[in-house]
Image (cartoon, rainbow, N blue to C red; front, side, top):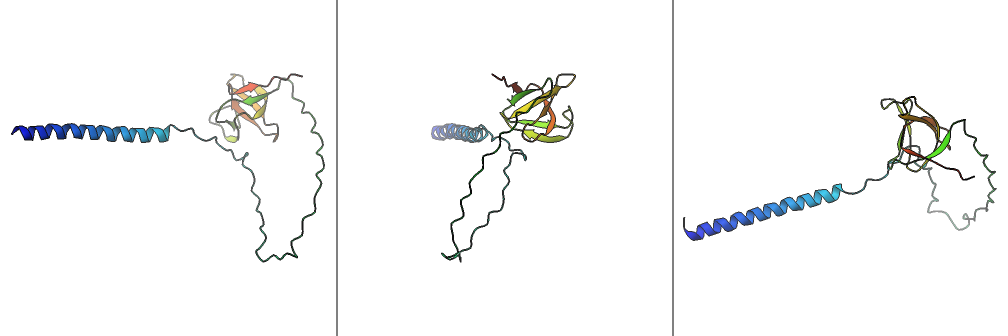
Amino acid sequence: MNPSSLFQFIIGFFLGIILFGAGIAGGAYFFLTNVAGNTSKPVFSEEKPSKEKETKPSAAVTKEETKPAPVETKKPEPEKPVETLPKGAYKATVTWSTGLSLRSNPSKDSERVGGVGYNSELIILSTSNDNQWQKVRIPNSGEEGWIKSGNVKKIVDNE
């Protein structure tokens, strides 16, 4: 083996190592930047807005047929009565960033009956005997279920 062949081998070896390392670093950078993004907040079926079919006027509508719609005056809604809480119950907000699952019974294995989003208001009705679960009611829908304890913050009324 002559000196020029040895020199070519050494140069080729180091260039191969450099290219291999750059490929690994580039792949790792690509993978980590795609994985490191924040996930979106889950949307529960109870929170999805209902999409009613909108009817679009056909292109054949003439100017005579298009009349301005009568202006409807909106009647003020009557004030909602203040909800009285059962004895020992209190209002709280959800602090778990991805929301909570409502369960039918105080157990991880029980049926999921709904969900509550982050920062939503709840009424805490009671706590299980082992203090691991809380029975809650959603104020707007009246739906009741069990959530894991420690994921809500009590709302302090300043009245």
